[in-house]
Image 1 (cartoon, one colour):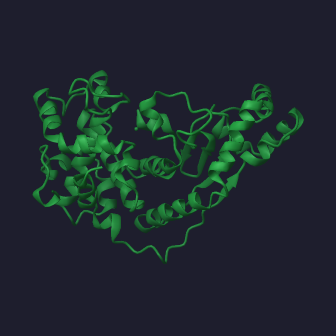
Image 2 (tube, rainbow, N blue to C red):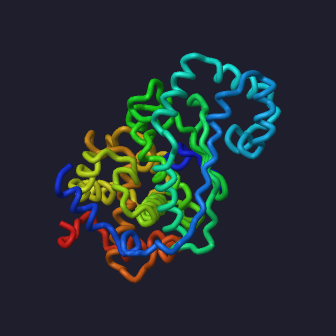
Image 3 (tube, rainbow, N blue to C red):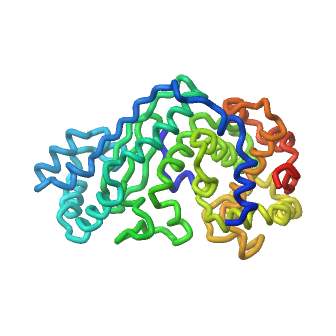
Length: 337
C-alpha cells in the first residue's frame, strides 16, 4: 500500500489542555515499550543527490537507487526527462539556497530518528509482527510529496522546513500548517494506520468516513503518546478550542441536515475534505470538521468501553456500532470538563 500526504488528508485555553489530557486512554499513555527493540534506518539521499555534477552522474545515481526512483518519482530510473529535470534542479542557484536551508533546519536528523523510534516501538507493542519501514530522506525542490507505504517512507525534507522557508509547497495557506518539521512523524504514523484500519466497503455513509478518520487519529495519538492533538489532526490550537466548545452546535447541524448517513460524495466532501472553513456550519468552523467529529466519536467509544484495546478498535469495521456504543451526541462528558 502506498499513500501520499494529500491523498490521505482529502485525509490556548486551559479547557483545551484539559480536553487533551482527558481524551487520552490507557493505550496512549500507560504502556511500557522500554524492552521493545526497533531498527530505525534513515538513508539520506539528499546529500549525494545535490552533489552530483553532471547528467552521467545523475544517471548512475538513479540506477543505483531504482526502488527509490520508481516509488518516489513513479518513473523508470533511466527516464531521460527525470535526468534533465534533476540536472536543472541541482544547478539552480535559488534551489541550492533552499537546499542549504534544508540542511540547516534538519541537521543530523537525530531528533527525527528518536521520534520514529518512539512511534515504531509503540506500533510494535500493539502489533508484534510490525516490520519497521525503511526511511529515506531526499530533496526534490518542492516537486514531490511525502510517500509512505508498508516498507518504505520517503520524506522530501524541504517541504517541511516550515513558515521560515525561502520557498514553500504550493498549497493554500490553510493547508501549509502541516508542512513543518513537527508534523512529519504524526503524518507518517496516520498514514501507516491505514494498514490496520478495517472498513466496511459497502458502507458509503459520511459516518463511516468520519469513524475511519477518527480511528486513524486515535491510532496516531496512541503510538505517539506525547504528541499534541493539534499535530495529529493538523489544526491550529484555536481551531481545536472552537471545535470543542462548539461541538453541540456542529452536531445539531449534522442531525438537522441528516448528514450522518449521507452517501453523496459531493456533500460528504464539504465536511471531511480540505477547505479553509465549513461555511455551511459557520465562518468560524474549520475545514475537515467531519474528521474531527469522527475522532470525538471514536474517543467517546473508547471512554464508554474501556476494555476495548487499540487493536480491537482498529479491526472493528462497523462504524454504526462504534457510533451507537460511543453514546456521543455532541456533548462533553462532565468528567472531561
